Length: 328
Image (cartoon, rainbow, N blue to C red; front, side, top):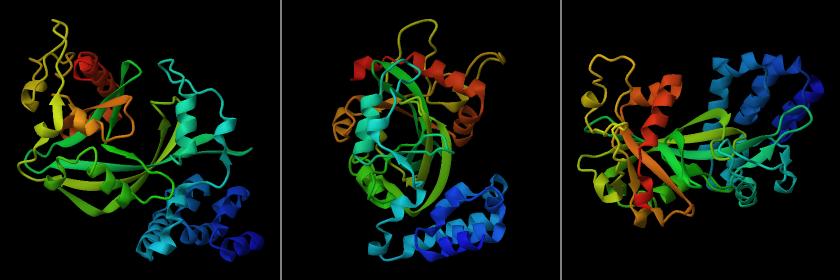
C-alpha cells in the first residue's frame, strides 16, 4: 500500500498505478481518493462501489475543473484524462464487421490513425474502443423540443442512432474548440440563433458502436444550447418525404396528433417530421459518405426511446418509411 501511495503521489501520471493495483487496494478509500484527486480518470480503476461514492465523484469533478481553469499551456494534456494507459495499435486490429454485415475495419483504422479514439486493453482488461465526444443539447426555447439525431444513412441503409448532434474530439483538441468548429460547419446557418453555455457536463457511456459493432466507451462533453425565437431551421434542413404506402403512417409536427392512437394501445405513435441538413451544410463535414437524420422531440419521448424496448422498436418503424435516397 505504501509503495502504491508513493507512486500515486510521485508524479503527475502516478494515478495510473491504480491500473495494476490488487483488488483489496482498489477498495482502499483513502488511497483511491488520493488517486482521484490527481486525475479524474482514476475512477475507472476503483472498486465498483467506490465509483458511485458521492465524495469520490466530487473529488474527480474537482480535479477536472482544476485542469479546465489552468492556463492553456498546462491543459494541453487534458484530453488524455479519459484514456487508459495501455493501447492497441490499429495494425493489430481484428476484422471489424457491424451487425449489418459491413466491413468497417479500414474506417476504424483511419479514425485511430488520425487521432479519433484509441483501442485499450491488457491481459486483465478486454480490448475496447475509447472515444471522446462533443455533444450539443439544443433546446428550442419556444416549443421546448430538443434536436435529436434519430438515424444515419450509410452504406445504402438507414441505421438507428438516437443521439445528440455533435462530433468526435480529435486528440490534442478541447471540447470548446470542437463545439465552435461544429457550429461553424454543420450548423453555420443557425449559429446566430444559438446561445451556447460555455460550461459543459461530462459523462461516460459504454455501449456497442452502431458503426463498428464493437464495445465502445464514450467520454462525452455536453454543451447546453438554447435556440432563440425565430430559429431558421428550415433554411438549414430539408424535410424528408415518406414512401407512399398504406402501411406507412404520415408524419406529423403536432405531438398530440402523433400520439393520438384512437384508443389503440398496440398502435405505435406516428413518426415526427424528419430532416437532413441541406447539401451545402453537409459538404462542410469530412464524412461525406454518411447522412444524419434529425427530428425535434420532447425530452420525455427522447428518454422513452432510449430506455425502453418498445421505444427502440418504434424508432426503427419510424425510420423504415423514409425516402432518403431522394434527398442525397
